Image (cartoon, rainbow, N blue to C red):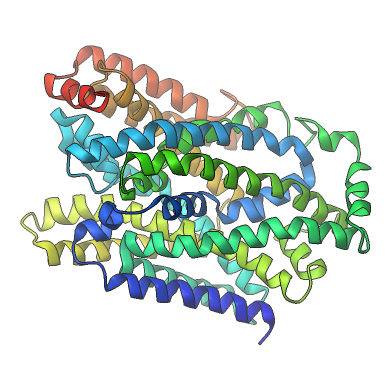
Length: 485
């Protein structure tokens, strides 16, 4: 067995072991859904960064930077602003909400804020969340299988089935507690793999001299150092604003704050999360350019990062660099899996099929939800539609279109009502899907991106819905308690 296969297998094995060990500490639904709400700042940092840094960054984004250079910063800048909104605003307010109310998942947050129609809000979220989030999960499964295919002489369906089985297994066993623990381990692996790939890759590019490697990058045409390129025009640059609106309302990030010990823990983690994330994002630009310089003839289905790791980073660092991708994909897989299944299993199973479920039955239903979502994501990954990068972007656009307006308005405006939130979620999602289908079918650029159509429709629907069905006294009281000193 090669070094790559050994390290890859060890990463999967350790993650599964962590999930198994965590399962022994899962005594109730609070442990399973929010890790007991007792995580310190360093575990919060690890799980936040690891669950946000996906295989799309390692594979898709490095391919894009290889072809378009520093233009990819147009995606990273709005992402960084989104981080600040997510942690410093949404994170703190979500944690405050959980102090006063029993909140276990993303749907609970919206249902608690819009209490007058909480059941309808929760049911709609349980329906929409899998539709807009499972594509992201499928993208991570595709990435993991793509990497595994370079190490094992096995067919794609077999590798995909084995990886999905392992990821679903350790997530199903350990729940959010296992996810947070395994994220801490996977964060260290991905940080090591990506950040160390830059100086060592530079040395390899410069025949042992990093300065020569940088010189080769500096000698690239000026088009590689501009905000737009022929393959990355202005409408795609504007489209990357999706991350500013998607990051603060991504359920797998928002629910992380429910695991924090207290509000102060979140604020301590903020600068650490920003620093680590920007370091990782910054690394993708030179890695992509390094890959392009070594393999300018890269074909479809190939990735600069994998080529760089296998050809230039040595027999041990190369496998660790590839393990970084695996760690990023694993952390995103497990966290999206648990968050998507939470809303689904709690609404369908606990509130419809088994309304009087006790603690043990609720845990079994939660694990059943993980299994069902994993099977659906496996089917999408098996068909392998769109590709990793665009599956991730489409998922982010839909999330922003459906949730950004009701979420932000719910925390910032006392006029936001449950009727407006329901209308905003439906209108935003429908508009984004419609514009996406039209643009893909006709090759057009209506609204620049489906994101802007979705946000506009959502904002208009929120305003009209809130005027027609004003916020109740209970809803206003929920908001006012969040802003109490």
